[in-house]
Structure formats: structure tokens, C-alpha cells
Image 1 (cartoon, rainbow, N blue to C red):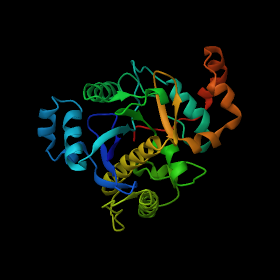
Image 2 (image 1 turned 90 degrees about the vertical axis):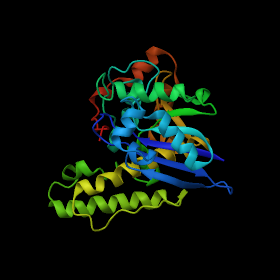
Image 3 (image 1 turned 60 degrees about the vertical axis):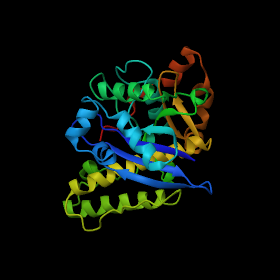
Length: 299
């Protein structure tokens, strides 16, 4: 059997990173094994123990060890929501610009990464997993038996939820979504959206063992649920990749993988320019993309 790890990786060390572990069943479907709102909870250690184990870095080795032990299956893919690249990241990458070109009109443009955010965290994840045998895959030819993949939940959710515009489920963005509603009303709205996403995920992934609390009294109480759902969305994209139903948007240095049906229906008139390998054609294709709005991908 195969297993997939989904990681909603925080861009800073003081935020939690959600982790989801799913595995293939004997009948060919997928089931949830474990979903946690942080590395510490997933590994089963305290924050101080994790820091000691990981030498102050992302606990990649401990994470993989815990996943293999729980799944009792070979981890084939690790799919993370964080900018990754084969080299240094200094700002908007080709992958970010192409995703913005395709999905900016649907509210799903990317946020510009930098040398500091996520900076070293991105490098720690890439290098740590590479040492464990997981190479960053930026195109179909890079896909190996064990691969590290970058994805972006906002556009992925357009496919999962059959939505025409960005799904409003981020806890910290509730006031932006519904500026005229009071906090209690916004809290109800966020809980409803999180519940809808979780229900959609429960169709392709059985055995999800948590629910969105209907009686939550604070936004902070819903944040761990949001992190777990984002991790599950990453794992769901991994299913699409293993089933040959996902494509990489970007170049050889960095790519964001998304469901193929979503990409092919987004901007079909642009495919000729998108597929062109010439730098000139690429520049022409990207003309004006900087004018598209960006979303905060770090939350």
C-alpha cells in the first residue's frame, strides 16, 4: 500500500504546521490515518522535545518515522503548501506568476515568497526530505517513487468544491470576507465553510476522525481545524498526482501542482504560450501578470 503526507507548512517558526497522513486501502480507495494541527502533536512529542530532536529545525526525520510507523505503508509522496525550489527563492517565481495568471481572476493569486519568509524553513523542508530520499519534483519527468511536491490549497479547492471563486474559509480573513457581519456571525460563517470543505474531503478520503465544532466561541479555536483541513487538501492533491490527474505549473526550478481538470479549464486559450519553452515566449506569456492581485498564502 501507498501513503501520502500532506503538510500545511507555516512560513515562520512561531506558527503551527498541520500534518495529514493518508494511505491507500486494499480496495484502492484512500483513508485517513492521522491528522494533526502541529508537528509536535503528529510526532507525539512536546515542542521542546521536537526542537531537541530536530536540532531547532523542521523535524523532517521524526515526522517521516512517525508516519511510516502509523501508516504501516510506504510513503510515496509528501505534498506541502509552502514555496519550494531547487535553488534560492528571492521573490515571485515563474510558478507563482503562472498560477496568478490562471487563477488571479478567481481570487487565488499567490503571495510573493522572499529570502526570509519562508526563507530558511523552505530550505529545511527541501533539504531534510532530500536527505531522506524525497526529491523535489517540478514536472512529470521528476516524479519518482518518493517525491516532494508543492501545492496551493486555494486553487485546489476550486476543483474539490466545484467553486468559481476562492472559498472563504481562512479564520484570519473573516472580517475581509464579511466586513458587515459581527464577530459571532463571522464565526458561524467560517465554521460552515470549514464544514463544507471537510465534507467534500470525506468523499475521497474515508475515516477522517475530527469534525468542525459547531459551538466554537473563538476564531483561535477554529484555527487548528483550518490547519488540519489544509493539510488534508494537500494530501488530496497527492491522490490526484498518483492517479495521473494533476499537472505542474511552473518551470524546472519550481512548480505548483494542481488538479489537471482545474488547469485545463482555467485559461485554455493560453496553453500554446504556457507550453512554449522559449524564454521569449515565456516573457510574453507573463506580460502584465504583476498587475494581478495577490493573496496572502502565508496564513
